[in-house]
Image 1 (tube, rainbow, N blue to C red):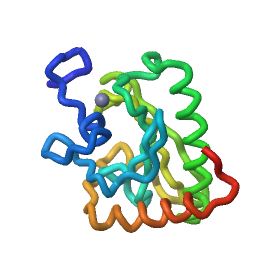
Image 2: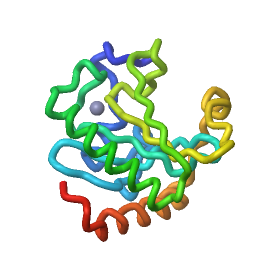
Image 3: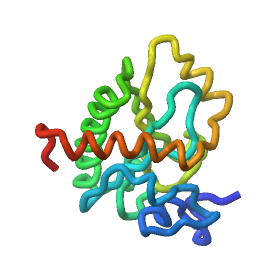
Length: 162
Ligand SMILES: [Zn+2]
């Protein structure tokens, strides 16, 4: 099993961040919602139940866990996560938003590059049950619909300056 301790680990998020599409990364370049000098936001490839189109906020550089993050990068992740939570409320018209961030195998981390999940939530969405069952690999063509809506919102939003 691959782990963050393994020097042979092929990081799917670094591959995505560097523009690579291969069998080692499920990210498609069309899945990119936002990028600045420190962080990128992708539509996650695996979706949970009714909570389609959830996002991950990742550092552009390779850091594995929360405690590996330089403080400046951590601050930017927080700022961008807040921006994206508002974007989900506005664009998806969801009833709520859940942030999740897992560290190490015991903490349910599966991709060993820091990533903060941002899930749209809906009343009675059965999210926690779906999360423990299984996420579903989404279709890239379905993801692009969500990406386009979010990009348009971010471009048109006058209140957002990053
Ligand atoms: Zn990485």
